[in-house]
Image 1: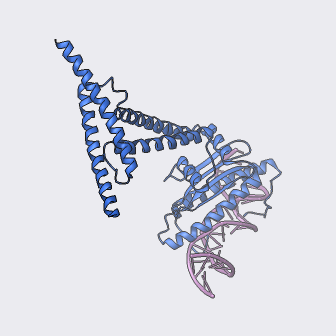
Image 2 (image 1 turned 180 degrees about the horizontal axis):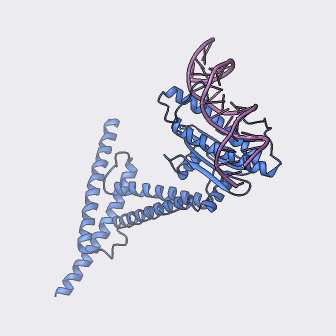
Length: 151
Length: 151
DNA sequence: AGACCTATCTATAACGA
DNA sequence: TTCGTTATAGATAGGTC
């Protein structure tokens, strides 16, 4: 549709590609509006350029959500169901992580340790001693710094 | 584009409207495919005829879900229902909880304590000492139990 | 409903400023 | 780069079968 015929394959020259994108994007948007008016159609059109810029058109008689619901019903394809499952999975994972950290924290604070065996208690003691050593060293560092600044 | 020019307004004759719908729908689908190939664009196009029939095109390099997520991010418009928002909210909450527990755990183990001030270091020392006392008491309990069972 | 036809209209590729 | 401009390719309205 222009001075020369072009093959339908990726336009290698990036500035031509950009120009063509912009023109054709406007063309498609216009067509979408036209079919909406001419034929009582309901259109949802979302275009992302390679650059990341987005353009969209949703027929004014409807909403994107409405179209997606109808899409879901008509095609049977999952949209946010799958998304929901992913989210639920992540929540499960986070909860487990949370629980085990909470238990570990309580143990370090000396709570809920009745169920631990002797070996576990020894490991816990080690961890606490190591922590205590580090913290006391750091305290001394801070203390020395303060002294030096004062004197 | 044809034997006669037409105004862009609803086509009153229903059979003409249907025919025009079918032709233009094909035209738009073709354009969507073309811009995808020519310009590396990613398109999601869903069309409902007044009759309820659906047609769609999603660029093969992506998925509708992916496009909707990007749409959500780019436009800020909500697409998902309240449930979805709640799930996202819960994930955020869990992640924060997770992060703060992780930090607390590291502190108790004597890691990453450079940023703590003297007061915080003292509180940490207290916590560790309390924990250590509890753990050693429990160790003694277990030890006494073992002795009693042996003798 | 399609599928094909074709005169006409529209979109746009290439170019220029 | 982003406008206009213009020659041409492509889309399609109105038809026929």
